[in-house]
Image (tube, rainbow, N blue to C red; front, side):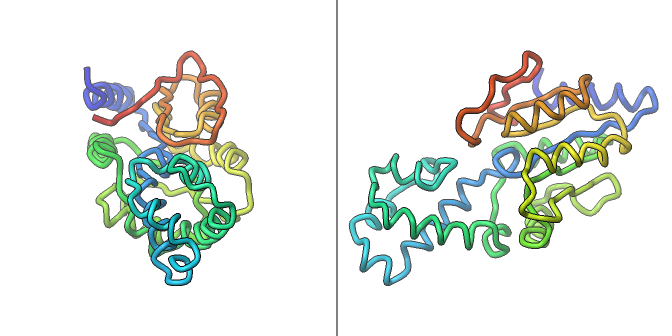
Length: 237
C-alpha cells in the first residue's frame, strides 16, 4: 500500500468518527529540499570578484559541485569536496549566514519529489495542514508564505496553519514543544513528518496515537536512536 493510500484511509477513518484529522509537517529538509538553496548561496558567494581573486583554486572546485552533494553543514560540504582552506570556509560561512535565511533565496525553494502532491492529497481529502517550522517570522515569514504559495502547497485556507518562531533566538526544539499546545485544539493529530528526531520524539510523546515519520534527509549530526514506532520515510513517492 502506497503512502497515498495509507493516508487516504487514515484521514477518511478519522472524519468518519466526527474528528478533524491534523497532519504536522516540518518544512526545511522535510518537504523542502534545502540543498538547492544552499547550493545557490555557495555559488553566489564564489561569483564575487574578490572571492575569485583570493581563492581561485577553491572556487574552481566548488563551482563543479553538484547540488546533490551539499551536506547539512557548510564546512562538511567543503570537506567532502576536498576544500580545506580555513579562511575560505570562514568567509563562505559568514556569507551563508547572512543570505541563506533571507527572502530572495527562500522564494526559489524546491520541494522534494512527491512532497507537493502528497501534502495536497492529504489536504484535499480533508486533513488540516500544520506547517511547524523553525523558521522565524521577522526574517523568513514573508518569504515562507510566498514560496509555499508559489510552489502550490496548501496555503490560503482555514485548514492551513503556519507556525513560525516569533523570536529567531529561541531553540527549535523548545519552540516546537511549546507549539504543540497550539496544535492540539485543532483536531486529532494523525501524523507528523520531521527531519530532526528530537523534535519528532517530542511530538510522539504528546500525540502517542499519531504516526511518526522521520524524513532521513539532512539533519543535525549524531541524532538519537529513533523510537520503535518511528518510521523512516526516504521518499514521498
